[in-house]
Length: 459
Image (tube, rainbow, N blue to C red; front, top):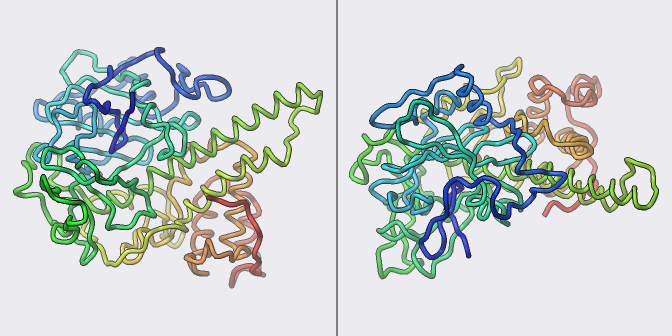
């Protein structure tokens, strides 16, 4: 049965039927076998940790009649309310309750995504385990004495292990031409949204609040029945300062669907997938090499050149995405009066000069210092060797200026130096070579001698 989704939380069958929401040890789930063991009972993602606290009685979730457990769950998971984005396309297994008048609310932080549907039966979660990637959960919305999270498998992975998630358990954002009913208009294309996506193809089926000037997009608007995609107006609804007249915002935790939250979300979803892809590919390759070495009587731990290339390909893709080499340019500035932006910049470390990779630009690009903040995540730190060393080596080659290849032309000398200095000052575990480079008298006033190495193709 063919499955589709236009967000990342759960799935709806093409014939309109839904699958059971909670499935344990039933049906086919990719990566269940060694060495990944995706169905492992022992998990260390934020939702799994919170569930353990609930079971011990260390944390208690409070129920509120207007929003159920949502506000309490967000607080427990440290997910800011200001991250709210609203999707009005019918994209959840709770699709009958979603419409342009009653969109689904999405909230997120660096490691967790939370979805709520008005009058829905379950809160929906994607929580990132450092080794396993995206883990899917639900929580019953009804008030009970002991609310708990339940892991959902089969429903989610049928959509969330696909080309759009880099072939691993992951997350994705889709932009569609949406009819007044909330369904995708027949015969129209859908777009996967990432940091490289043209703005004109983003946010179909979403509300977006904020001022984008003359930068058109697909948000805030419907494709009337009988209309064609080529007639869709991308500009007249692009600058919405509020959602008055479109929905009853009193039903939601905030009245916005912040454009800055949308921009960060577009980057973060595919960054998560690339981290998981690099982790999985490294473990799978090493496992296969180990079996081959045993069969051939070769020394344990030896890795062929072909195997190294399999590991380095996704690692190179990660390096390029992490440094925003393919970021779509903005025709800015984008409105900066954003509660989400203020909350986002408060998190994460700053160097002695007060700089952070969480600082925004919002004129020509998302961030002032184009390096993903997910470099600080547990999932990034859990990337196995030799991929981890390859990533650090390639980052130093680029940030030191030794790699001046065209793929990194968007990074100025000042950008590279600032990012390198920020990471050396704030990122635990960076190689000693990085620190030596930053403090060396030969490089203290500039970057290293340029060269043009030939790294593996990242595409």
